[in-house]
Length: 188
Image (cartoon, rainbow, N blue to C red; front, top):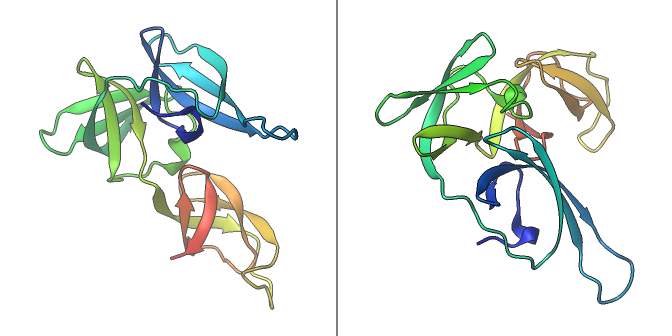
C-alpha cells in the first residue's frame, strides 16, 4: 500500500472500488513548522473516465488497485485507437486516444518496455519506460558558443511532441527524455 508521498503519475489506485489512474500530482509544503506536506492528486476513473481531485497528507495510506501487469509493445494506430501487443502470447489490447492522452507524445512504432495494466482481462492503461529516445525533427539552428548549461529553445520531436532543449542541439539529433516529467535528459 503506497503512501500519498510515494505516488507517481500513471499509478493505479483503488477508490470506492473503482480503479483510478494518477494524472497529476501537486505538492504543497506549508510554511509553518511541524505541518506536513499536502498532495493534491488528480485521478481519472478508468471505468467511467471521469476526473476526481483528492488531497492527502504525506503519510496517508492508499490502496493500489489489483491489476495484473504484462509486457506489451506498441503495434499500430487504428483511427483514434492505439493497439498494443502482448510480448508473451501476442494477444492484442486496444486503448482509445483519450485514455492515454498524456502519453501519446512518447509512443513510437515498435516501442518496447511498455507495461499494460489489466483488470479482469481488460486493459486499463499503460506505463511507459522511464526514459525514451526520440529524434528532433524541427528546431532553430544551433548557436555558436552555446553550452550545456545555457538557455533552452523549443524543439519538435519525431512524435510531434514539443519540449524545451538546450541551444546546442540541432535538427536530426537524438535525445533522451524522461517520460514521467516530460523533460530533456541528455543527447544520445
